[in-house]
Image (cartoon, rainbow, N blue to C red; front, side, top):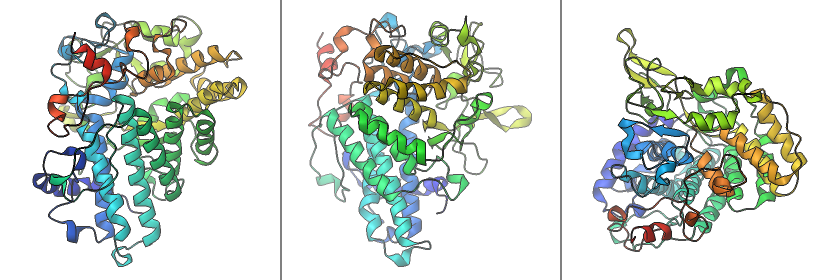
Length: 507
């Protein structure tokens, strides 16, 4: 099948026409369904452009206000915010990681971008099956299956992400051609959100294949391996550990992925790596540039000089929390030789320690070292993650021997010795430490700690100081982000605030 990720600009142009014609009911918006409804969805090219638009909207949702890193890393005490990032200052132990007080970061409380991606997927799922065979240059059945499978995957990822970030999603799976007259929809349960993600992934698995015929598509388009990898993580949230272990096995045994060697660990984030299962395309290209600006893009907060010419490290980045790094990596003893330390951090002994996973900087004007862009992909799923998902699932099933096998695969790649622990609780601590080391700055560790309950476990050495016990439990949603109801209620008057934040606003 053709490469179509870069075609999303066409889609967004058409999308702007559709959005102008619609109202503010973002749940029901279809980005390209309006002036071209009758004549657009008739060819393979239209379907591919529509799918490229879905990927583009997902990228926008994850990079908007650096949401992916703020929500998954800043909340896990991985970074310290200096003067230029004062709006995030409450994401610190001293301020109890107050998600609600981000006066200039309202977008973090607005899930609209994810629903725009969902709406696009709903439109694809509705329209593509009826495109006539004559509209395809490739095999019609195979091409339709691939496009639909990827649309189901993107929709599943959005519901998975919404469910872990805000909880209680509004679930909509139909395309609305008349959004103005569509009825408002109430929030569902968080469990229903993960169930919707699992259902979409099972459908995606039936439609997609392992591997890629075109190397340019590796990891930046979903495959059967991508769907199984996300399904395994979804099952962890649902505490369906046998199913999680089995889904991880499908990735490990049939996906064709291999770990990147420790010596070249940084290659993972340059894109299309042998370890990568699904990633957001953000590589620099002078013709169709989807890379993030090194001055203001999603990766920019991690970098300064000498990685970005002329950028002052003292005032413009998120500093690495070296206390956490020293605890996680045990930098004073055996862990000091961890291959990931050099590949992940720079200047740990200085006043401005940086995370450098995303430091492949390219200058649009190289002679002047001007207009810098970060040419790295945002890796969302990779084999090391699936190994540790498998280990966590097996540990919860009491299979500590199997859990150790997959935990040790990740440790061995980093140059660490194998663990021989057989105690289930200790095994879970070891797995979580490894996730903290492996995925530092990859937007995931907060959710790992929250999902497992280790975030405030007094027996866990790397539990996060500052989170109040009142925020625990599934009922009050204190570890999920509040919604900006000032923005969202006019769009859907049936929305309600997460209980913890509703109560907090009254105090």
